Length: 180
View: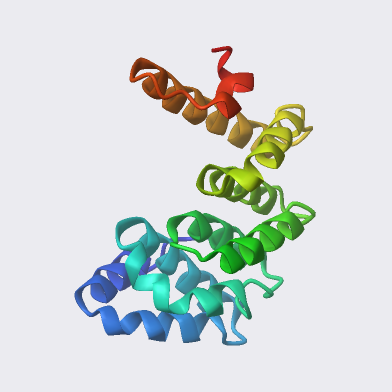
């Protein structure tokens, strides 16, 4: 069961004392699944507001943490990946992690892995064509979670494309989803 518990307070405390991020990263690596779940939830929330705080922990996130087979950890890793500034090598590792997550039993993990792969494609053109193909497949998925996530992503891409088209900068890779 996923409940926010004291996660909001924890995030607030960590944002006041940036050194506490290390404590959360170590907590994810404990044997207690509830501690891992709560710590990953906090890390994901922190990544939205201050992704730079997670930069020193990219090796952990793409290494031992990404290998944890717990679904709550996996979907949060997939949510965090696009927030980070990654080197080419780290992008390759993140791509491999998310490709593996697409085969997870959890449809939520699959949906967030799809999101991360599409966003990696936005950051790195060498992944873009694959992201487009995955989106097309996901739009036909029998999973409501995956299909809905794909529809949201296409909507985001269309909005981005419309904005770029308005400014004369439309990316031809978005055209399959926009009709532009």
